[in-house]
Image (tube, rainbow, N blue to C red; front, side, top):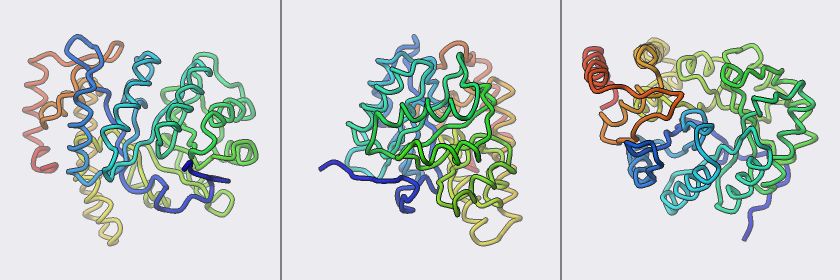
Length: 315
């Protein structure tokens, strides 16, 4: 039987993106071709770390470096691998081509995805909130039974419109709107989004390195690439915050910051993928224009991670 929803703003907590949502890597062979055989290992690894929701094909998944067919196959594989498990799959469907985004949204609904999300087109950019809402409304309409999240990440898209205003306009245009994946360091706007319309929106936060600050503002969930390899750190952070143990929460947050700083010094995407291989889940290289670490760089990164205590932190 198909799922029936009216307005997604009333999603129960069990369907919201609370807790840790891992933005997964897209696995490639050494030659850069898609390597879907690794997806089952990714899912099993994350489940072993108590992660039960994934966000696939997003920024961490190098979506704009994938072909339409590859994105289609990636979603199909994740849904097949996680069938019958505790894992929920959120599919990113955004694209510079609106027709592609709509087709991916339709496919995600047919596959039974827990939710879909979409970045804004970023070459021809929506000139204002009204145009952004209309663009997202068309994508969401292709999956009329599936919760929809707008994916705000202005540091990468170059599109920086008011998210409180987006919610104000979108609530009457997008019946399936559940909220915003808020990858934006503007915690003032974040507070307005959390409180908009009496606090009905689901607004998972998207910057690992600012997660504690977002929790203090009222965040209930976070979507992050760091949860691929450092979920235990952030699980402890959430637990410490829940117990009002802010000293412990700050310590875990700073561990996350140190990891991100180190990976960024090598080139974040390639370094993050290298770390996954160190943990036994080889997701392969990054695709250009992201860069892949050389063998000496991987050795250097491993040594620095070991020196800071990373492998103990995530063990």
